[in-house]
Image (tube, rainbow, N blue to C red; front, side, top):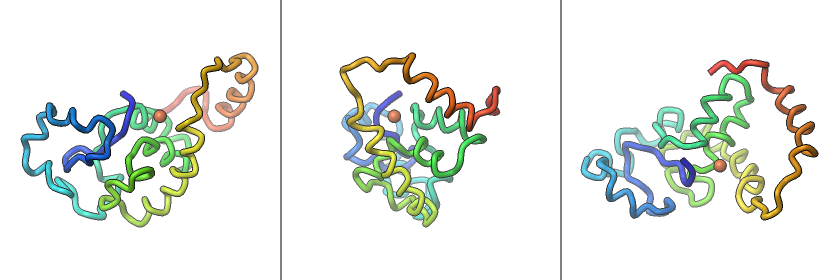
Length: 142
Ligand SMILES: [Fe+2]
């Protein structure tokens, strides 16, 4: 799954890419899920919020025992509409608001970095292997 990550159990933002397809989602027929806070309390913190499944959430679960919190925020929320559109900020707590500066700092290295030129994998490999060796053991715990 790619595209915007979004909380489940509360109203969908109409700024989510292709939000019109939510009409086919069975949650659209559950009134409790269609309120601003839904099943959550305002300001509860994103850690208490269930997010849609996507590549952000998947990678977060793979690396969560191995990386510093700042990078976990960058990974888990880089498609969360808050950093771009200011959506769902009512579910955040102070910790989230503070940590989201890292998500915004990561943004230029994610969006608009795709190129038509194929990267030279052999040239890049040593750099990334060094980086992986620095942060990850031979076997990941997840
Ligand atoms: Fe991504």
